[in-house]
Length: 472
Ligand code: ADP
Image (cartoon, rainbow, N blue to C red; front, side, top):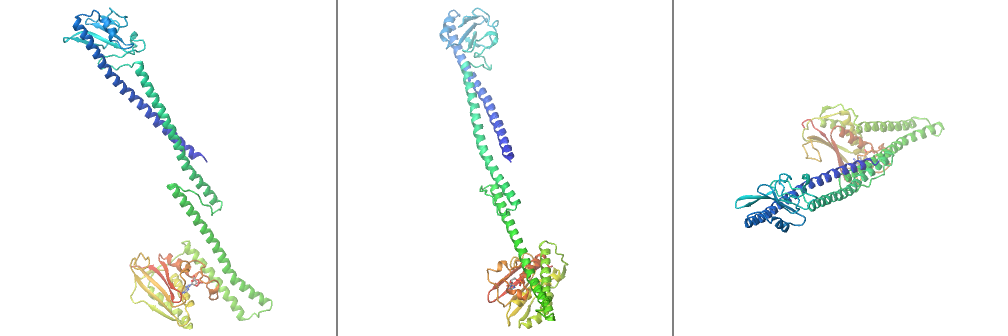
């Protein structure tokens, strides 16, 4: 469970240690180099200055007698000054150790030449207060020699050490601060991840009402929002599945109850077993068969398994045929049926049986909801891209408009839903269970088309559907 935070924390620690260590190491090296350079330049100037003063003495004196006293006066602190004459014999040594010895013999090198009247009259060697100089060449003194890497005096070495020490301390503090900030950031990442994991578990266990609380405005926040909308969607789907099952049970139970009641009454001798009562039972079985057939079509269409036998079809002809079939029913209700197809329309690739089912559902609805004396007009027209509704391809648009009761605007968004009826239980007398328009929508969608409706209560309704035409 804590693996991610360990991984992130470990990676961060490694990064901080490597980068801070590298930074401190490189800064150390470059500081030491710059400092030595600085000391070297200072030393050269200093020893040349001393050499000039010793030369001054020689010019006045013409020999090296008394140089020892002068060196003692010139000496600064624990500094050791040595002067060798032009032959290399040491004539002055503030430590009085090598007087009379050859500079070569005591391994003195890289001294500063002492020049008088253009001639080298001796050599000056300067050693700082370092730890015991000279012997065996383990000098820590500063050499005035040109181009020689100077060894640092104790004070200078100490300064460098302190700088280095401070650098390491600063590096460690930076690493500590980086680690603390890193840990806080890691927690910010892992907390929402843990919350999302908990959410996924709850959903998996069936608690579809669970929502994660991820508030950050970054990608994790977005993930949290997507998770919550996925959970809402699952919740809605689950609810609609339950509603669907309840609706199906309800719709099937009604005709079954009627059949059972009628049969019981006949058995008990309450009803005679005559033709009328058998017809009433037959009516209910027809209704049951229709509901089951509709449900099967719907579920096939919704799962994309509806097999369409497509063929180029003249939609005007198809609509005309359907109107002709409904003529007797319309006349019975004193309703006028019209066909409005002023222009020839391009053929559409449709499954004629399914298209007839669509037009049948629309026409039977229109006849059912239009009072006597009303008019139903079926129109067929060709539309090009975007000229109507959201039709994106050249299509054939069919509409069935009536002068009936109309539909209140609050029902319009749901009118194509399964089992949705405007007034509950009422149209049952006519056999409507709220599946007709859902089938219309699924069939048209299966043909790559779309449906829409316009309606005004008291004035009438117009249902439209568009099917891509072959000219497109
Ligand atoms: P049903 O089979 O119950 O008619 P539909 O899905 O065909 O179910 O229709 C859903 C609802 O839409 C119906 O309850 C009906 O009230 C309303 N409706 C459908 N067509 C029309 C229409 N032409 N005029 C008024 N209302 C309609």
